[in-house]
Amino acid sequence: MDKIIEQMYQEAYRAYQNAYTPYSKFNVGAAVLLKDGNIIAGSNIENASYGLTNCAERTTLFYTYSQGYRRDDIVKFLVLANTKKPVSPCGACRQVMAELLPADVEIILTNLNKDIMKVSVADLLPYHFSGDNLHE
Image 1 (spheres, rainbow, N blue to C red):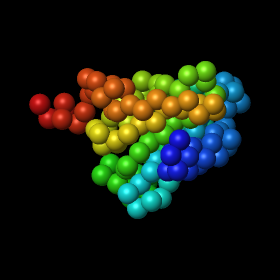
Image 2 (spheres, rainbow, N blue to C red; image 1 turned 45 degrees about the horizontal axis):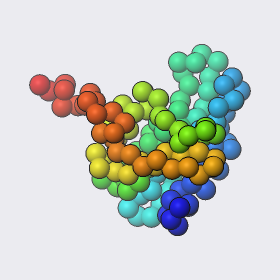
Image 3 (tube, rainbow, N blue to C red; image 1 turned 135 degrees about the vertical axis):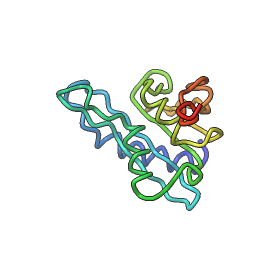
Image 4 (cartoon, helix red, strand yellow; image 1 turned 90 degrees about the vertical axis):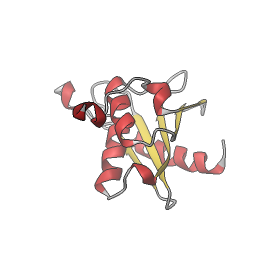
């Protein structure tokens, strides 16, 4: 694992430890590396009304955008969970990632064993709905 990915992993792990998961007990952490060198991380936050739960991927991206960053500022995105294989984002997160991440950004899926799978937005959601669809 290279130095930058290790830093992202550590930030995602800290967020993973702060997840609020009283129902599923399934913690997830995510981290985004920005062009300015900053790393922003977030975790999943559950709610008794499951539909109101927010995944780590969306928490991280929404916080990144709320700080004024945009897709062109994002260099890498990492997702971490306690899974046997590198974690797979849910469908809702894949759709949000398709809109808020650059198409060619490196997405690093990993687990607590530091197994890594590197993918792109197109790998995760090859025929995604986009804002362009609204103007056709």
